[in-house]
Amino acid sequence: MTAPSLRIRRPGIGRPGPRTHARAVRKTKTFSLNAIGVLVALITLFPIFWMISTAFKPSQEIYSLTPRLLPTHPTLGNFSAVMSGQASGIGPVWLFFRNSLLVTVSTVVLASLISLLASVAVARFRFRFRASYLILLLIVQMIPGQALIIALFLDFNRLNLLQSLPGLVLVYAAQALPVSIWMLRNFVATVPRELEEAAAVDGAGAFRIFWRILFPLVAPGLVATSIFSFITAYNEFIVALTFLGQAHSDYTLPIYVTFFFARGGAQWGPIMAASTLYTIPVVLFFLIVQRRMTAGLVAGAVKG
Image 1 (cartoon, rainbow, N blue to C red):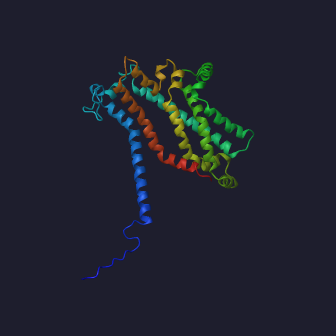
Image 2 (tube, rainbow, N blue to C red):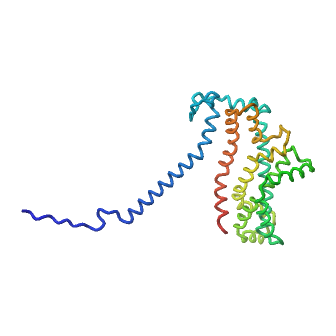
Image 3 (cartoon, helix red, strand yellow):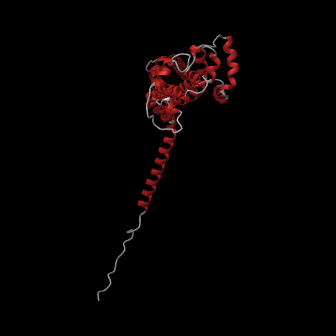
């Protein structure tokens, strides 16, 4: 008879160690977070996908009882009706796109310029009621814009600024200033004062210090804050409809889209086509400022 063999069990063999367990936990956590991120992205992007898909569908497929994700017979008829003005009845989309672009660009430039100068004054100078001014900005921001429409309407009527795009630019710029000043103030505060003092010692004037030193360092933050001005001016509807009144030639894109509902029912094909065209400038703007916006947000979160 042979003696039974003795097996020596080494510690750790056959059981996962603490490192292996921690690695498995990290992989499970990473996979779960990625899955949640993909799910949120799909839910967020699906309305955009459906909008673009519907824009290329003929009316038979749009009103079909069996909805399809992709158009079976793609068509450009909806885009043609929007561009020619046939769907809305008040003119081609390019006229209102020009108005929206003019108002948005003017608002961004005006709000950025004023907020930059105001943020430099608040961050660099000590003056009376400085803290009260900052608190007042927050209080103004907490007031809903719709609550000020009647008062603004009466004031702008006395100034003959109703039914005109310049009056709309002034309102939008004023709405964007509180947030822009508060954000830019943090960006300006991150710039070391020693840089300005060294330039002043070398003989640089106030304008040259601002243009050559302060402005390049604050530019990423200026791009980040311009996002709010852009969104305010490009997507706003109630103030534009109230202030422009019957001046159809000055209507912006948000008002233009509503005319597709005014002919005995909603024209979903042209609505989706106009909304797709309406979204393109926003996507292009974010793609252009994406890098500077990220750098600006990071810079504003770091104390210099």
